[in-house]
Image 1: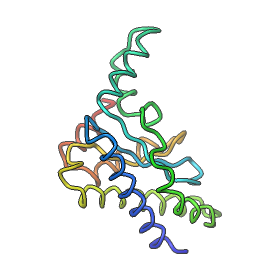
Image 2: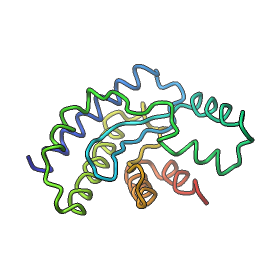
Image 3: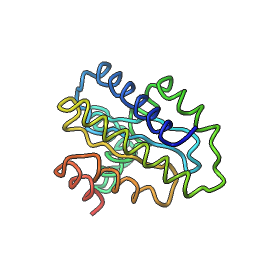
Image 4: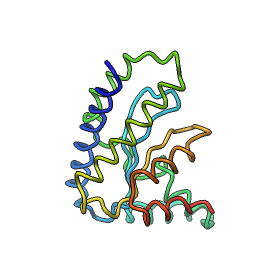
Length: 173
């Protein structure tokens, strides 16, 4: 299967999962949405967080020791710290089957194609769902990767309106 077909499948999966997320949480405080993969690009998954989830996480972490401003930023924007991780796995089962069949011998090309397909899917989500996700910062990330921040920044810049993207890009400054 070619990357055009995989990209279309990722877009379909992402739209389905996002619609499911919005129905479940009725847009209550969802501020972030991410597609993520591992460094080997074996699977695509979705994560999201709500303001309520973020505040609960901060409170739980503060039980051990007070949160620093850096901690607060990390918990807000690190998808591995979010309350909604691996959302709607069944929506991604077909695309993950397709990815399992792909040749990964040229890792850079494979990773570049996957990141591009994931970014394009979130661009389509923003365009298709419009006001429903207008205030949600969306981005792509790679868990346990040295290039995660670069990928997050580049994807957020493409996916989001300038005001959302700029706030996200300044998160670690």
